[in-house]
Length: 339
Image 1 (cartoon, rainbow, N blue to C red):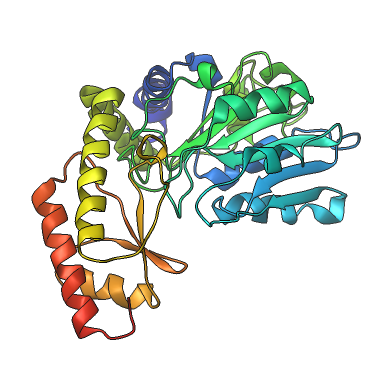
Image 2: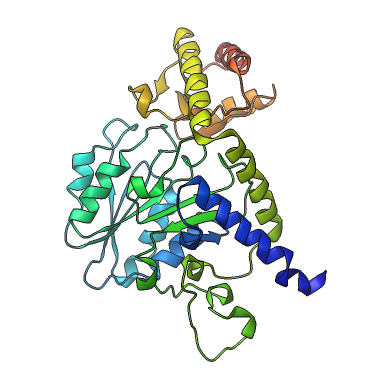
């Protein structure tokens, strides 16, 4: 179809993806933007904010580092980033986090589920703290959306960004951004492009007029291959349902944790199963070596600092858990010092 694809199937596919993602998180389509990755979404938001009166950003030591990296890179512009530490490398104390949020805080940027511990933060409680003190709350939900039910308005997040690579089954090259409807008109990103223009196909270089909805946070031409893959993933997740996914992963995670503990492994996970998402870290001295050893047996896990991460999803079963723990136990015997 050549260039004419823009005026038919491509724009329709983009709209369908926004619509179905909005349905998944209980938002409206007008509150959804599509970006190629989390970093692009952060750039759109940070370039929209006025940090002159509120120059501070708060994140945590357990968040995926792209969040901290983004704001640390803005320090030459006067933005200051506080990184709240963790005492146990599993959780973040809410009171300690709250102590960093004040009248000079523009934004709190953190995760609902931490990527190295699987701990689920109390986002509703954090939202109230932020809003009582005049700060915005941005949630990096890459480790949560899909495996956990998500009602973004009930959570109280002002902005939520997530992606297709993990629990949404869409692969790389696509991220989703929710921006609360009343906030949208107040934000005009300078990290922008022609997709943010209200009349993009007029090709008028003389004036930048933003779209009225969250599409103003989209910038350049999207990867349409990634969009089609993402749409297929979203449809699969919706066909199962978030509640069923959470029930399934909770059951698999509980089974995995029980097997690992019975086999004598040391875990870095929340103590409360209700606050434990489907991420289980097994402490390891040489995690990359362990990951390679399991990969050779067609067991795919991932390495994180000081541990090996297991993340069962709905397509796994207890037999997978049994085989993975048995293989890990064998590696403990054959790779002295790795675990």
